[in-house]
Length: 221
Image (cartoon, rainbow, N blue to C red; front, side, top):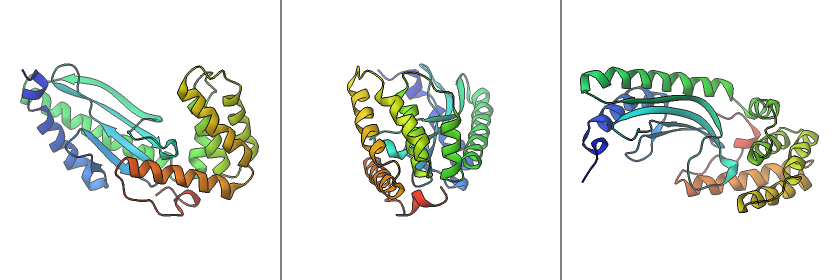
């Protein structure tokens, strides 16, 4: 038997609001889902209107770095998280959906302003406090620093990854990639080529068109 979320008009309301406010900004909906993409070539702005257990919607907006080379959307840098609003009636929920749309637009705009190009991304990532055990944080900081032409900072972050005990397969994979990048960190062209291969692979897995070949050498958009 379908649940309340299946029977409610929430998807229609959310999709209508999202199309009205996000499509003019250039975002693309993922099929008929509650996910929207702001494509910057080597990174994505990701907008999700996640449903609660019952009918309704929240909001999650963040950035995804495509050098992770995964087959699913992810949030690597959050812009906003809004707790789900429950649906009771259309009159009650529609203005809530409109407000979620407004916050989504503000968050997408904020991400674009925060990450206009690779140097700003590198500064953001390398200035974050180090959180022990979060290997992908250090991976992101390391690869961004290497791409921005700062091999010493890059190697420092990669070495933090290599000092951890690989207690799970994903940790071993993070260390494998960190070891490779640590070796070539002073060679910006080699790092760029490695990152570009990962980005191209990730875009293919996500069903996105290939990025321009110079995306990692110039502005993010």
